[in-house]
Amino acid sequence: QVQLVESGGGSVQSGGSLRLSCTASGYTYNMGWFRQAPGKERVGVAATDADGKPIYADSVKGRITASRDNAKNTLYLQMNNLKPEDTALYSCAASTWPVGDKLQPGDYAYWGQGTQVTVSS
Image 1 (cartoon, rainbow, N blue to C red):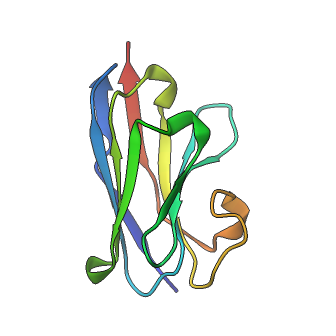
Image 2 (image 1 turned 90 degrees about the vertical axis):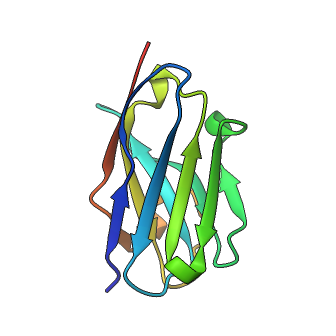
């Protein structure tokens, strides 16, 4: 079992920044950030392999950077120029094996409790 603990959510105004952190209790291969807005499905935001190379959803490219510190078992999500449409519950996910689609929620076995991000206009 892998436990994931997220932190760093909060409320900001449009154009602001937040940095999310997700720390895993053990070894992980893929790690990713997902978000779910009220009334919508959970979607992938960014994800990395064990080597830390990130991929991003088209909707966040250029504004969000994912980075990974394997020594700390931690995945970060730096979010800049936030928009009201970024408001959602952000959850970290992990797998202990290579997943097929890194931005597909169904490919991950382990999930954190989520951290709320609210962006006001």
